[in-house]
Length: 103
Image (cartoon, rainbow, N blue to C red):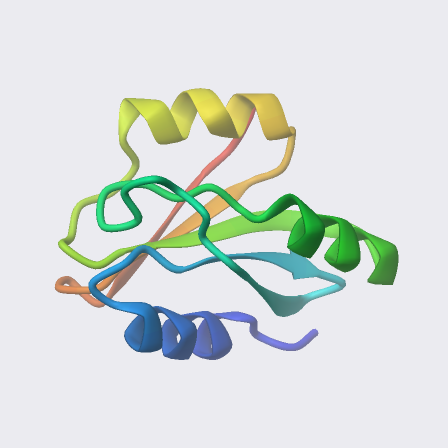
């Protein structure tokens, strides 16, 4: 299976200081647009981008970056529970991945 992380890390670097977001579809990273009101502090995946990704295969995870660092917030944890898929978070200053599960 292909590792989605290098593509997600590149996307995060391009989008900084905004949070980058995307999904993993069949093991591949699918870039999505962040339409949050404050993209430096939050992310909202563009619904059209999500729908296009879902048409191409099974959405296996949500991915987003934390350009200022840190790991899953309480908001992340609550939102993850609603999606029923794992969330992978790329903390840029630490250069470290973390994962939260919806269970």
